[in-house]
Amino acid sequence: MSTTDFDLIVVGGGPGGYVAALRAAQLKLSVAVVEANHLGGICLNWGCIPTKALLRASEINHLLHDLGQFGFAVDNPRFDFQKVVGRSRAVSKQLSGGVGHLLKKAKVPVFDGFAKLAGADGKKRKLAVALKDGKSVTLTAKNVILATGARARTLPGLEPDGKFVWSYREALVPDELPKRLLVIGSGAIGTEFASFYRNMGSEVTLVEVADRVLPVEDEEISGLALKAFEKQGMKVLTSAKLGTLKKSDKDVSVEIEAGGKKENFTFDRVISAVGIVGNVENIGLEGTKIVVDRTHIVTDDLCRTGEPGVFAIGDVAGAPWLAHKASHEAVMCVEAIAGKHVHPIDVTKIPGCTYCRPQVASVGYTEARAKAAGYQVRVGRFPFIGNGKAIAMGEPEGLVKVVFDAKTGELLGAHMIGAEVTEMIQGYVIARSGELTEAELKETIFPHPTISESMHEAVLAAYDGALHF
Image (cartoon, rainbow, N blue to C red):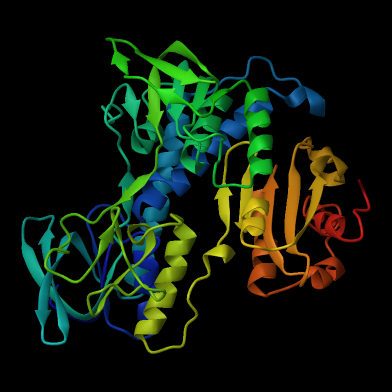
């Protein structure tokens, strides 16, 4: 590529990086992307998208074994596991190519290689790029956005070995369906894989060091998730301690302490889902004013690092580790660079979604956190069993819970578990972003029949009283 000087260079082509580049191109900034692996990043290639493709397949398998309630009979339903896995890879490949098309359409050059900060030349930053073809190039830009993402955290004794112990990468491309599976960690990644493999027929044991599953969610929602997982046949151990993994030539054994007793288990495979760490190595942070705290780059509320002209967005900049947070930061950051007035992100207005079965979605304060922050709260709940659409769909297990400020009527938080709640949570996100109170939400007309009516009923339950329960 002949041009090596830009207004902005984005290091990383994930949901933060490529969105930053596209927005910069829209604002007529000259911009380039440096990507070391695949456009779309972990989210598109090894995270959000392929897991949803797998989960869709597992939901179909679950339904095929539960068709009796709808009046159907299917004899001996079966699947080709490699085709299930292959479809998820094809979906990722298609969308990664789509990102490449968007960047090409926007005339954004993509440098295939590894970039490192290499000092400054006057007011411009320098980046040394080692290209995959063995060549190298030095790029310069007024501004640099670091969007290098994160990777799976590994703990001593739980390092992925490509055979018995898997990270999310190995769990996405298994050679066969394990009969006995241990999943360590019950956050979003762990519970989604536990749901997938359980729905496909694996015997799943889910282990969590905290005292409840999905520990960042509202405690009531966590409790309902636990009941659902156990009803599906998962063995769930919380407040658990793991002993040393002992590998044979065909399986893994481990002692697990939970509930005051120790027990030995044997598994065919183990998935370690114990968090992520930022990709801060080998990107030239040494000798800069950039501060790294627990593997994540420290930024201000506009994503600026301690080094002039260098920004950081997405997972490398810390929690919450969500693709939509990275994309929003990308737009905010680029618009600030372009001189536009922007609003810093309020993390209490970022939705969180977990696509296990049943789905879990939330935004804002949990009931406990709201009380700890000094709010007097009004809480409303509405169960799916009172919703006509949920019953008609055969999905009567679920709950919508809302938390209001008793003094002002502000919606402090919303927490949902059940079918399709990841599609519904945005209604409450808009309410929080628009600073709506219970008055506007009570007067909002929800379409019938929809599961979203439960959202309205939950608001009524916090005030006048739900009508259908």
